[in-house]
Image (cartoon, rainbow, N blue to C red; front, side):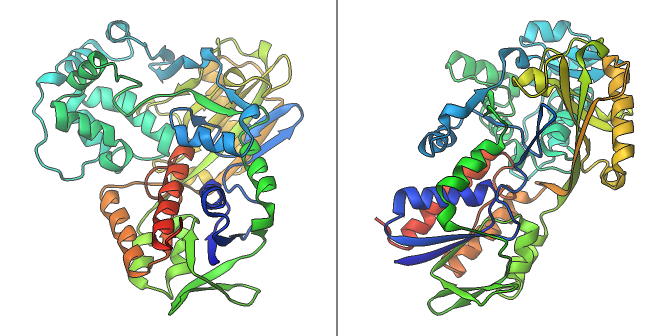
Length: 458
């Protein structure tokens, strides 16, 4: 029996545990160590006063079969809740008003979201020169080169802030939106690529990648964690902090803060990359340095509940994003109670707003009172809110979202290359191939496959 340790009990560690138990459970002994008193990492759900508020991520896109299969395998499919169809309506706040992102190209070109010159510039995209080198490029440089600076500032910068909490001028196109880079490389143009894919019947979503419907669980996203924890509780040890990983002749030794070292044949490190820095310093400083080179952005999530009658704006939709050029501090707001049923009491609504990110790192230092006042004031201006919130819940993440800055693909290759030097040590999490729940599960599946091959599992 091979002994395998998983360090970290977020969704990456839990999914790695699931894949190992499901496929190779009779061939190995698996222990997952989580230093906190609970598993789930940034996935969590507060249920109080009739409101359901997610701590971090609030769902996943139903476009990845592996995630849906995992949900089914653990018996959580009965709790799945797709987003309401009305949540397809999304908005951008510009020039003192909300603009719906038009679903068709013709409607978009008629929309006042962009100026006339901005729309004309966008239409010239097929005639723009194609990039010939394979050098990494920032998202902002790519988009402004292809569709113009106004479209980049108005549409792409807020999208990047909403997804990554990041700065589009610093983030890597190849790491964050590889589909965009491939579309230009293959077709010479984003518009030409979308037309070609539509003719082939392969068009789903936009140029940033295939779409999907946001999906969660009836009582919040933490239901997924609760089901996994119950299913694999005999393999999970909480309140157990790993301090270092060491290599020896027969595998690895894991050292703990308050317990004796343990020996394992293989180790899956599923912590955030900044936590993996300390774990690997004694093992290999070069590996530790590469892990340390992945920056993180802080983010604050402010959940506010209002009486429905106190909001004049129609909020039947997903929510809105705000370009940084508008001079507001909030990044955008998700209309949680319009997306999923039962997220607020009858007659009330819940708005989930993000502040901070790479372009406003000081926001995390604001007090809860300051965050509430700032958020309420800006929401009131945009949505016509006449009274203060009846419900408040704030989640601060000092190191909330890894930033895939320019050069990130090369960093990940270097990290993966150390797996050859230290056979049996593998890394999973949201700091490598993608920050979403789907990305974490896919990465863990890949890592488990590599480990199974290394250990000759059948």
